[in-house]
Length: 130
Image (cartoon, rainbow, N blue to C red; front, side):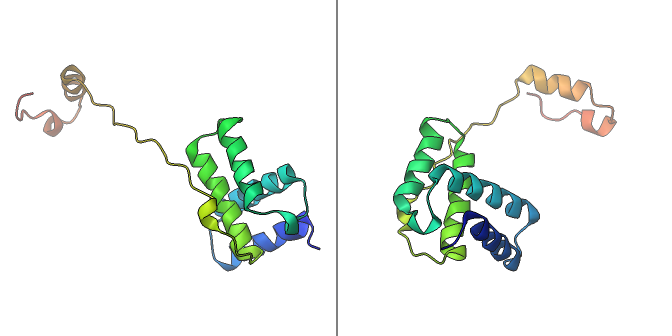
């Protein structure tokens, strides 16, 4: 039986073998560790249902951002697919759709003010008027 600490050590080795960045290593280890602590069961007994419940709690109760949920999802999927070599129905572990944000548009006055405050003559050269 694999302990959580042993599983995390294997995860670390797998990430390093794949040549993933130090940031990915730290992120995946942290997120999988939190997941395993929340499940509070042996690694061998955890399945898709546990993962879905955990991600659901993140979304509904903790109200974390879609990006954070997707990082947890990616870390957990890597852990099960690569480290534990477990076949799961990964379609049952969805990614959260990130809301699209429209860019903030400057007003004509704001653009004019930016140009007026430019120290470079070339940037202040007259062009087409607004």
